[in-house]
Length: 146
Image 1 (cartoon, one colour):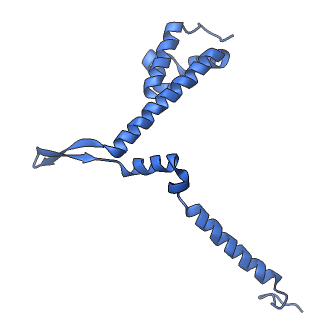
Image 2 (cartoon, rainbow, N blue to C red):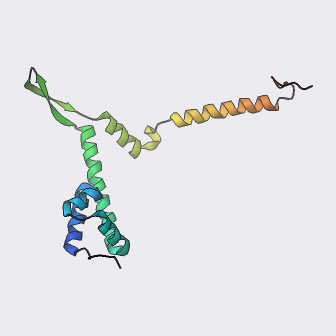
Image 3 (tube, rainbow, N blue to C red):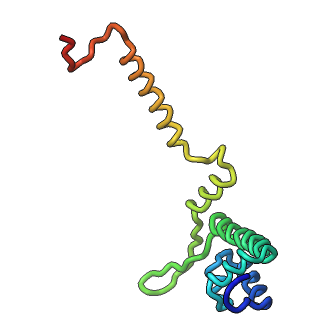
């Protein structure tokens, strides 16, 4: 059983609702005025609450992902100023967010391949070193055999 006063069902429901909208445990705790440790203890002792927490968090993360997609594809309008006066707006999209989303959703196509090139170079280097050390006709440079 959890220590301290039990968290009222109304507060737990409010926490879960906040979590569905923001996807962030700390923000959801602040939104209902509860300390995170209180809710983490409740989650540990109450499997039903733990399952509802996970479901709410997944929904909240979907909301965050949707916002990232919107910013990447549609962007936001930002004011343009000239001599202290607003003269227009420009739509700013996020290429970095777009690439991040593509890499996570289609990693086979958009993942970074730097590591693979290094691995191939390392294999070539190791094969060359192996050939030198196993070459029976080569002398050991820098060593006196006498």
